[in-house]
Length: 437
Image (cartoon, rainbow, N blue to C red; front, side, top):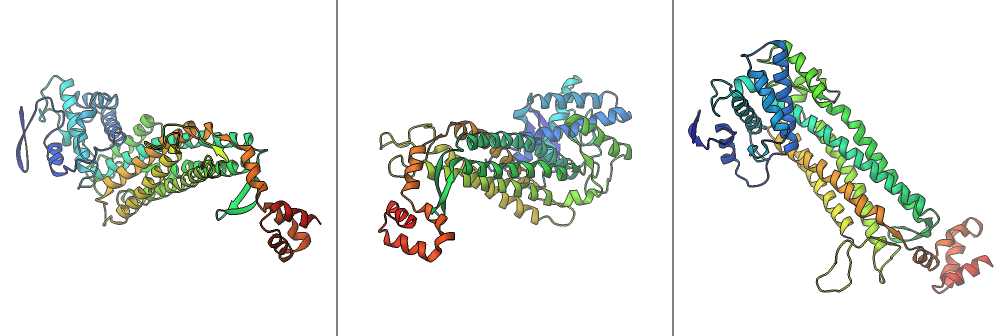
């Protein structure tokens, strides 16, 4: 065991624990047993720390070997060698300070081990004086969240592109299958099954484009702004150098914010991104529900398409198969919509120069991005690509309807067509003969 001391007294920790007293306090204070801070965010924070260490090495700042060891420690974390050391709860007070301290302590102790010192020898490498030098949670955490969000947005955009392509493939495949169109769940006019899937593809195409464009707003970062965006306690050369290193490390065209205080206190960009994720969720939910309805039956419903049977649908009704993939997609969409509400509420409650609720924004946003990326992949591979049409059933329902009647209104007039339909006694074929006469 080792003893670490802080403002509130000392605490004993197992010698093998890479985190220190500040992290241990946070684990105790925020013992929600909810879920740990998203690892994508952790890795992005570590990337910021690595960029800082590399910048200080270039500038020749710091004690000999310290920033090289910190750089090494960051690489170990980014390789997944210390995942179990990041133990702070996703929801925490302090605007993310506990997570930043968790990262600082783990990196410091890994660097100490690299140099041959015992964990906790903070007189050699200090979590704050060295790892966190020239930084604040208030510029590190938002910068890291933007990096993580961009990385995940790119993956989501790729998933949407593949989903769009799968829908377009079905559009072409089903182009010659005539079916009954419906408005307000009532019989409308003839369309093709391909047209329906083409419309779905267009919706996803818009989502893909919106997500691609919003990355521009995320590229502005406030790193170097420290506590409130004014750059207190950060060397000028460091402020200008760290952003260049971050660009190299991430491959993202990051730009130093023109007004860092704005980025530090305002989180409307995350609300914007979340709003676009909600828009995608709306489209995914609408498409999923349409597929459930078209698949309904197989004997008592529409049965215009057949979804691939993924698993048994009932523990009591033999042979029943449920549309489980669209149902999952709809639940993911509901979760993303709920996360959007949380993000909007949290962003609106920032006061003055900082938002204390950034951890909720981060957790909700990254969860939504991950859920939608995985959902889009599963929707494509386990549902869309496996859909089979039922052209005979589509034709049957079309012929049982009065969908043809609309074509007669320019010649006979709306009222006359209605009168003939009423006289047909619910027999579409008889109505068509009467209209032709």
